[in-house]
Length: 469
Image (cartoon, rainbow, N blue to C red):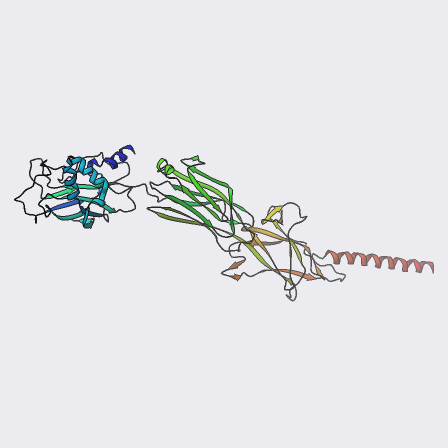
């Protein structure tokens, strides 16, 4: 980092010295002001951590950057800073210092000349070519400022300004007709990894508390905002929110604003600078509202926005239920007034709470389902699985079922695309008080037994009466 700061502040590798080392007051009277020089920019991108040490551009072509690649779609603007340069020289400022000052001030001290975008030329990417006058109208050697004005998102920062003072000579003192410049950039840590997960199953019940995790990488950027926004029926529990960077829970260096259905996280610049490349993990919980729509996805979205990137991920949960229809076993007519309890596979009973549902071993106070005048009733807000109805009261004039009635809650068992799913038919047999008992008809059996006792008593009395005669 220190090397990078030094590189930006002093701009040493980007300053071209005057090959002939002539004074600014010297001119070349025999040189035509219509002559031009070709300047070729080779825009180079190095992988993160592999940016070479600062070195002077000689103006000659170089072929030793094998660890770099050419970078297209980078815009460079050229500004004429000749007048500003010679003003500094007249004040006794040396060439190198004048270049540094001009590079630091940038375009504000120059006049716009032209702009080019790097592209592939031949087999080399990252090329921008310029044809520029060698002298100004006063016959002075031109001085140009090259400024990077548009950079792709995968670059840490724009390269520093280049100041070129003409002419440029090679080591043999010969003037270069073509000047090669090599502005360099370092590739940023990509924010390509963003993951949002649910701890546990995606099938949930009313009132259930769901744990979410968000995992990403702190990228090299100046601004970082993470926004988590969930369905209206998912209620954020702010006390459960935790942030870890580099495996350590942190409590400062960020701002977190909570909402009913999510939160916004903004990392401070100091945190970004210290934590570049570190894994960032957020865990938190949300509660499923009892007003959630059954068999529809309850989505939870997360977005990460920096000045270079925008990423989005989403996850979803779902809650379900089941419709039932109480009917006469003979004529299929609907039956009103049947009352049921719901049991799970562990034998526990469904209870309703303020937040949703829960399961208890006791049937006292358990949630009751009652068939309406159309025979319909339903259970809502259950996770996928196998359940049972326990009939505790039959419709008037019908025999109560003594067996548990199995049913299944699964995706679309309650509704699909707004259409109600087919109900499970639950049948009841009308009470029959005949002498012959029927399956599951304990009341009938009772009356048969009573009848037999009465008949036996009558026969006994009849025989007794005969003996007395």
